[in-house]
Image (cartoon, rainbow, N blue to C red; front, side, top):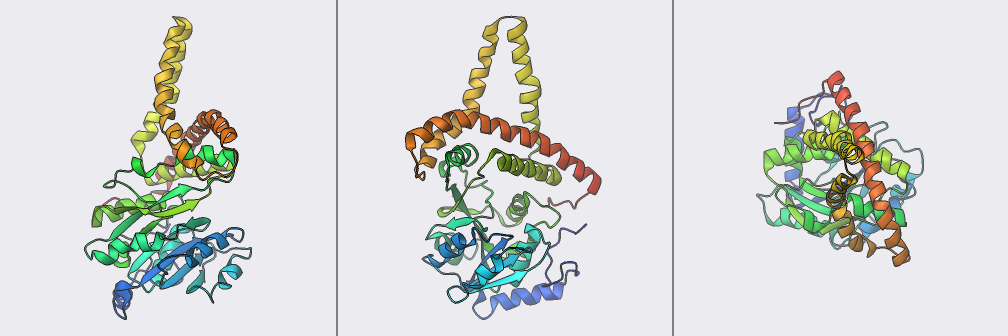
Length: 361
């Protein structure tokens, strides 16, 4: 098993950490204007159908990156060829690391980047035109700040994706800036701070950005929240892909020992409270079943509140989508919770068997 430590040497990934190499890379970044140089990084794998969206949105940025470092995990489609075709329009380089996971790919990109300011996003997204300018400006203006959290919104293409976006994605007004943990779809930080925090955890395949955020925040303080740094991405397009996504997220929670209390509450609600209310109504008076109503209101309030906002980006029939989503949201909630309840214990079992590094400081 790989250790948690950020892998500073360029390749291969199993080389030992070199303190001298680390210091040299920091010195290199801080000279030749590196302290103000902005590097944009991303990881890709078989993104031939969607990579144009990201690259074209980078071209449209109001503030262009000084360099773009993309790590490919071993695509078997035309992803690398498409990226290479943009070299006359963007300062992009592709590093091919077959078999690397997302954490390894991001760490490799951070190490290879020349700038001290690193902006991170993902393939399959579309950046708002002012994203890079908004997410890096606080770092350029405040030398004492080490990290900036951007935000992300759904870009639905189907009515199901509208319902899924409303169910699973918070709105900016729901965010508590002091505690917000950014997705690595939309984040920026100082390279030296990320390396000091250990980089992304290479032993973790999902929820790796949350572990990175928590370590980073514990060492460098909270991220500055910049809601204007918006990234748009398409939600999963089917129940099957959504179920798998949330199963893997919950398995990642179990592997990383994240959100134990939340998962216990979910098991208690489904396995104890809901059956108890049903039995009270069945064995005594049916009015006991009325206790489901406040639970359902609490459970569904936020998705229904978000729905009008998500629908603003919807290009189809508004009324039809609204009716569809009203009935689909409760089902999406249920499927997501089932996926989480199945994935979490599998992750906990993996953690017990594999004894991963302790990432908390």
